[in-house]
Structure formats: structure tokens, C-alpha cells
Amino acid sequence: QVQLVESGGGVVQPGRSLRLSCAASGFTFSNYGMHWVRQAPGKGLEWVSVVSSAGTVTYAGDSVKGRFTISRDNSKNTLYLQMNSLRAEDTAVYYCAKEGDGSRYSFDLWGQGTLVTVSS
Amino acid sequence: EIVLTQSPATLSLSPGERATLSCRASQSVSSDLAWYQQKPGQAPRLLIYDASNRAPGISARFSGSESGTDFTLTISSLEPEDFAVYYCQQRRNWPPGATFGGGTKVEIK
Image (tube, rainbow over all chains, first blue to last red; front, side, top):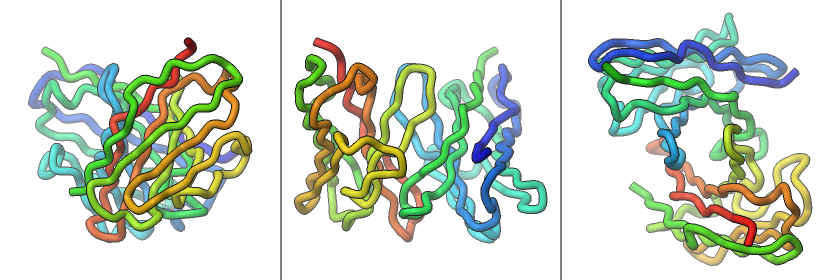
């Protein structure tokens, strides 16, 4: 079954850390770049970060640069997002997404999302 | 940074009507634009990639087109399950980050 399953969300205090995971199955994980996209409550989609298929190239959006780190373990078919120095504005559902087969500029598979709430 | 502007913010239509959603890019994105559908409590679903190619399993009532930096998603005849929020998205080779439009909500009139 082709799927992505996120885990690791929860309630965390401002300034603390959290690590999200995304387990992939049903496709050759190591062939695809992978992304994190988030959605604050009642808001639109915001791209967060990308890691290349081999894990050698990463890039993050300005709102999380220097605080969030994306990584992957191709031997475990798992994507990660290490989130440090969390802020209230990081509260969102976090989705992992796979680059598309038809075009690597689109996302053809998404996880169900994991909710991160940053609150004291 | 490329900005995607979607219009209208809300579209109120009846089942069976035609829906036309717009996405304007602040600069050229070539044809590297995708459209997604999102229903409440669900993850986004890819509808269209490369501006006009339907993703596998997507109904032929969904079509995409482009004219320069203006992109359009058309739903030829709305079905009850089509009432949702639609996002456009672009990404380039470098920097490899993506940007999304603000979304268009298609609601039942």
C-alpha cells in the first residue's frame, strides 16, 4: 500500500523541541525528494522544507531556517523534521509529501498530517 | 520569491455549474504549476501537474490551462464532492522551495 504516515506531533511549550517522523511504504523511498508542508488552523498551505533523494541537499523556508532541520534515513524509509526553538506561530498540522512521478515539481502523495501545538 | 495570487477567494456555485479558478504568478514559472483539492480534515490531493496534466485517477471534468503567468483550473460540471478548497503551487529547480497560492473555496450556492 502506497502511503506516508506521520507521527510525533503533540503539545509543546514555546522554546522547546520536537521531532516529527514520516514513514513511507509502497514505493522506492530513496528515489524521491521529500518535503514537509504545514497548515496553521484555518489557514492555507505553507511549504517548510525539502531533502533530496539521497539526503545530501536540504533547503528550508525563511520562517523556519536555522530552527528546523530536515533529514531522512533511506534504510528505514523514514523522513524526519527536527524542530527546535518552537514558537506559537509554528502551531499547525504538518504534512510530509513526496515529489511527483509525473513532475518532481509537484507533490503526488501526502500523509494524513500530524498536529503540533506550541503553547504554554 | 514567486508569489501566487488566487482568485476569487470564494466561489459560490450550484452542482452542475462550471467553475473557473484563477492563479496568477508574480513572475514566470514556466509550466511548473500544480493544482490541489483539499477537503476539511483531509490532506491535499494532487489534481493537475505541469499546468495541464491530470494526475492519475482524476476525473476528466478537471482541466488546467495556462497563458503566460496566468493559470486556470476549470471544473466543467460541479459534482457534490467537488465543493472544497483548491490551491495552486509552484516549485523550481533552485531555490527548490515551493510556494502555494492562498486558496479558493468552492462552496455550494
